[in-house]
Image (cartoon, rainbow, N blue to C red):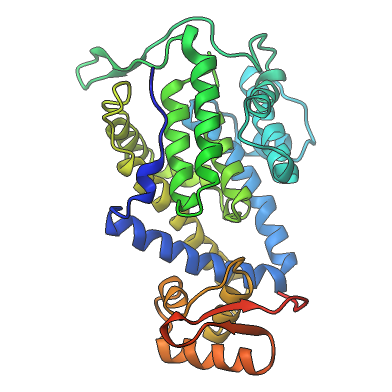
Length: 353
């Protein structure tokens, strides 16, 4: 049986590219957070557009398509599905809405995963929605000559429920480890979900829904405003290649998560960059470096150092960071803990973030 163990994320031997990607994403996330507070209307408009793109793209990856006009009508619930593909599209719409509106109350637990899967397939009328697979299947690929071969053999059906239980527990365990970066953990869990392939149908779409769920629960909500699924669809070849590389040796616990992590983070980074671009088009206001520093400190749940802020905001000089921190301490917005290089800063209780 496959062993689920994410402790390697805490060994300090992560590739520099992944560390740099997480820092870049943190910087863009801070900027997006500032903008969202000030320009709710703009973000509401972006959310409506992204929802349509997400429903369209996630289904298109699986070959489930209809016209753009019909997608809009289905997503906005102005029209009932006219055929089987549209019924599947409507199911994704409902599951996506569930996550958008209630992600705080949905967890990476079997009961919630099964409920989302049932919602995904219910309109299409599948009787196996919300149930694990009962037959074994393999994932095939076709070469340039048209020859088929087995690319991957998922977890056998008889072992699926146990594997999902172990995956759930491993994720909960890693979530409680303060030394594990949750942004690196999420793609590892999604890869393992895909390799288990727990359902007869809908595994790919479920993996994208669960990606959004875990990102939202950890504060990375860019997928609400720029479609995460569209970015995957636009770079499908890279996505499938990273999945192939990271699933090699999976059954014997010899696989490397890093190709899939890099692809996942790159996709998320592209979403934040696209959000930055779209916001600039809709509203030309630039965010000041001071505002970025202030938001970074005020949004931190634990005391944060100057060096950590510089890592999150690589385009801001240490001198500027130091000056802003000094001003914030002086006006009572934050307090300094410790002295010298050991100094950390935290929001003063009762101050508005």
